[in-house]
Image 1 (spheres, rainbow, N blue to C red):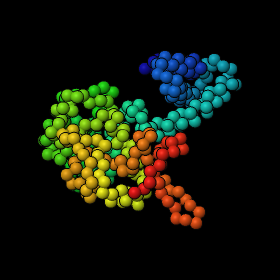
Image 2 (cartoon, rainbow, N blue to C red; image 1 turned 60 degrees about the vertical axis):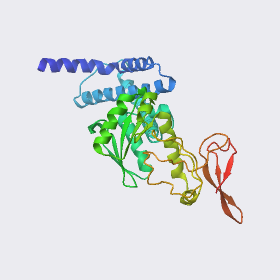
Image 3 (cartoon, one colour; image 1 turned 135 degrees about the vertical axis):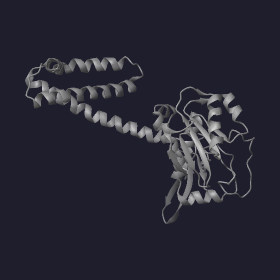
Image 4 (cartoon, rainbow, N blue to C red; image 1 turned 90 degrees about the vertical axis):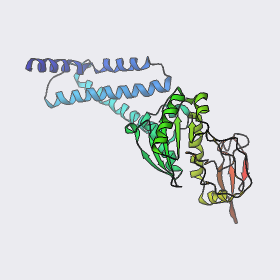
Amino acid sequence: MNTFLELLITVGRFVVGLWPLMFLAVLVGVLKRRKGFGEALRASIKGLMLAWAFFALLNLAFFIFRMDTFHLFPEEVNMKYFLAIGLILLPLEFAIVLEERHKKINANTIEEMRALSPSEFESLVADTYRAQGHTVEVIGASGDHGIDLVIQTRRGETWLVQCKKYRGKVGEPVIRDFYGALRAANADAGAVVTTGTITAQARLWAEGKPLFLYDGDEFLKIIQTTRIHKSLPVEAKKKRAQNIFVPEPVFQPAYAAASHTASVEVDPYPPQDKRPFMNMNEAPDCPACGLPMLLHTQKRFLFKPSQIYICQNAPSCDETHPVD
């Protein structure tokens, strides 16, 4: 045992001085992945930071035990170079962590959504439900029959949700299994949310059942319209709720027949509406860009401020819409 420990220490005293070569090996290995310049740069910084931390621990151990080590650089400058590289890498690594945290919260594109881990995608779906005013219990990996979330709605209903972090297709067998779990739990409705696509056979099988299927593009639009709803002032939300025009839902349930707009005064969230994601698109769409518009307050000298809807791409897009 003592011989093995001595051998390990001897190897460590030699390896710790090879940190410049190890850094180069990490950099070359990362660049061979060829995932684009931005991705390669982030992976390189992460790999180099891990390598630097490893050699920092080795240096600290040998410094504490006052052991001499091998150096490629002269001893008087070796540690200066090593610490200087660490000081450069640390803020870059911190910036990457903040960027990834921002992506986890926002997920503004399909690629950002697909870059999330399965647990992060579950959290994104759960946060979207919470933003719509529901209570969410995250079941996750411990869930039975693929049930990831249990939703208690504002109407007192129970919805079950399965989150599929896929790049491929979700087929009919997955929907069949989930529907079996839904019936066994006696829930009011269920949803399958995926970052991939849902096959036509799966959608056809779900017709006539309280199942709601959201692919990546559909769910991304749900996220965007939910954020628009949260950004509207309270007064605007109340005014829109009192509007007698009921727009066609952004996403129809899998079992719904073709719906039509109605000019009747109704509750914006009717009791019979069991869609796991409600239509949160209360702002009008920009006629030029097709994006939900934002409520903007215009200040006027000596007059009461007025409100108007403007495009998200303003000032590039100058489309406006009056507040009803």
